[in-house]
Length: 189
Image (cartoon, rainbow, N blue to C red; front, side):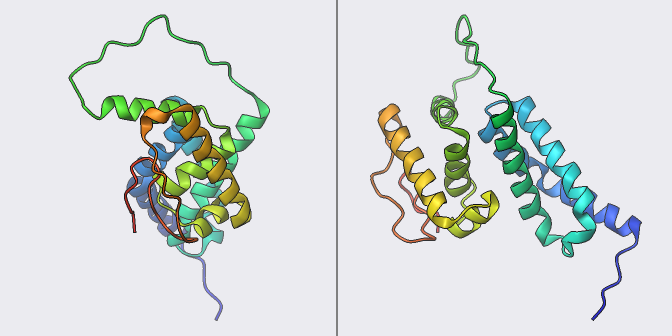
């Protein structure tokens, strides 16, 4: 069966709908990866630009998010390889606004994630913040499942050692597609 390509106006409207529906989630993931809102937004924009160029080849709109996420993670690793940006400590911590009981935990998790090497961070974010299975996360990163497992285990071990106050769960995922969140110990099945 020879499939006719969609007219340009239909492709554009499909892409615009995809961007409206998924850009928030993509930006949140990019922020966790980069540790910077601006860099995260730039990463999403570049990944979306590449997704648009490949839109005709994606065949189905359902493939777009997987393609965009994979592109985003590969772009992030490429940037990390090219340049390492020196972190500059602030003179003083910013004054908190309203009391948010989860703000301290979010900041601690964010700082902990930033302490990981880029590949370990990507593995942990995909598995435990994006709730991807090992298979899906490995596919997104373009690596074997065994490599993803090793990166995830090393990342979690490093987080447990350096940030014991986060009370990381002792329970490792029991199966290839288990979803026990190591930061909270709860199941995401």
